Image 1: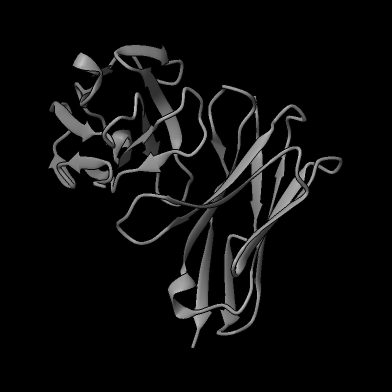
Image 2: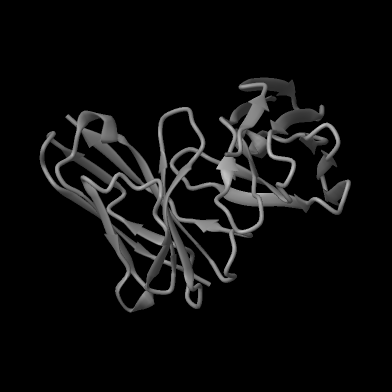
Amino acid sequence: EAGVVQSPRYKIIEKKQPVAFWCNPISGHNTLYWYRQNLGQGPELLIRYENEEAVDDSQLPKDRFSAERLKGVDSTLKIQPAELGDSAVYLCASSSSGNYNEQFFGPGTRLTVL
Amino acid sequence: GENVEQHPSTLSVQEGDSAVIKCTYSDSASNYFPWYKQELGKGPQLIIDIRSNVGEKKDQRIAVTLNKTAKHFSLHITETQPEDSAVYFCAALRGNEKLTFGTGTRLTIIP
């Protein structure tokens, strides 16, 4: 069974530029999560989807971050414009249940903002 | 909200010895406690978890203990091997709310 797929793996951009990350969850998983992991820290939830619906986006900085999960499968996380402080690893995870148990993580996208 | 503290931040043990990582949580209503292993360049991988109605759980060389009264839980790795070297994260969950992670422990196994 294929795991969570993310692309790109690495992204380097200059500040004020836009950037987008893509995630394909494990087949059949209806819950999808985006996390941000700063260096030396644990992951922090940005947004959680149940199928197409964003059910928890309280930690998403909505002034510059946006996300979508069309058709309840793949998801895209966007930052526009990027700031220096956005440099981090962006992780996507999915689970088959409607709660937070047993989340499976992708390899992440390492974003560097110059 | 929930706050999870994890200690130590770094840990080095001789191969074959045991390693113990400890976490404390603040919300007494938290009821699910997973442990994740993260290798360089990879996402976190769930290695073991425990729910609040259980005091201890084992899976081969890995065990987790939970003390609800003291609000702390620990990861125990016995007979450590070089491939156990990684960053380990604990986390806590209350009901259907978000997972709160600790700050991680970098474990190094010395051959």
